[in-house]
Amino acid sequence: MDKYTYELYSQLLKTSWKVFLIILGIALMVILFPYAKDVLIMFIIAWLLSVLLSPLVDYLESKRVSRGWAILIVMIIILALIALSFSLIIPGIIRTVEALTTKLQSDVINELSVKTEAFFEKNFNNAELARNVTAKLNEIGVNLLNSLGEFFKNVGSFLASMVIVPVITFFLIKDSRRFKRAIISQVPNKYFELSLNILHKVENQVGKYIQGQTIDALIVGILSTIGLFLINVAFEWPIQYFFFIGMLAGLANLIPYVGPVVGAIPALIIAILNNPPNLGMVLIWIVVMFILVQAIDNSLVSPLVVSKSVNMHPLTVIVVVIIGGKIAGAIGMLFAVPLTGIIKVTLQQVIWGLKKYSLHSISPLKEDSFLNPKGGEAA
Image (cartoon, rainbow, N blue to C red):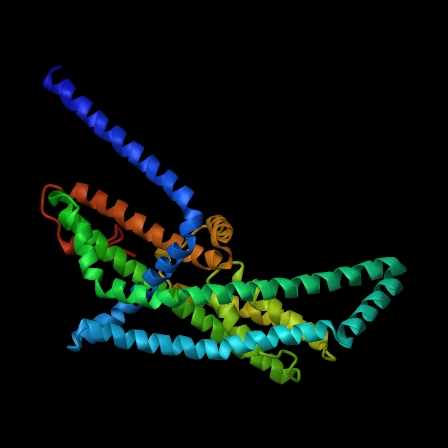
């Protein structure tokens, strides 16, 4: 066997082993995923939090606060804010579900059923159809309450298991530089500078994206709360727990196309159950308000605070939301789009960096050479 044939054989053998190990790794992930799903979700949430909080930790460290103390201070502040939020939101959830249950069992539903039957009997001369419609609506209401109860039960169990997330987040932030060095140490020397640049830019872009999504959700929640408050003032408080519904709309806004519906449905249901004298106008204004909030978000807020580089085709968004829901339910739907955006940003930076490296392979890479083809910093 000559030298050329031996080298070709060795290269083919190495490639075959790599392909085999990749396929084996994918197969193991598929097999083990159902058992490791909860742990994986915890690590993903912890990593997202570490990316979100790292700039604040770096700022405190620049003010001569030790990194350990800086992380501890930031974590205490965040945990206090989370505890305060849950102390406001969880009681609201309980009161809302209890109120909906009471309403469904009260005379309000009977009154609505009578009105619906009268409407169908008058306009369609079909009392049987009216009874079927009202029975179906009652069934939908009961199923919705059962689903809400099950959902909140699952969320409660999930939150109980999330107590370990702050600990994981602490160590991810504390040892982030060590993790980077470990990753870079595995890269061949000729790709060292390229890898360092790509890692730095990916980290910046992912951080900006997550921070932008968080600010966007907060603004949408505030706008929704203000809108529901104004509707309450104008129509003698037909929507109870408007603060909880507004914040829920902001959180749900992280799920494109699904979020606005998740925010609007509770407000519409509560308004219907309260059955104010001008119910039709209240429902119209609720719908109009959520449409206006989404228009403001899509045209003004999102383009300003969320990186445009992670824009995805609507079909892609729908597919990843469905996949996320199948994998991890509501939590999967919530994190599907941000994670897809992060993966997209990472791939864009890696591919673009490799192309740039091939163009500058003769001369050493410089940090200021890593610009977009349009001339600006990579977005």
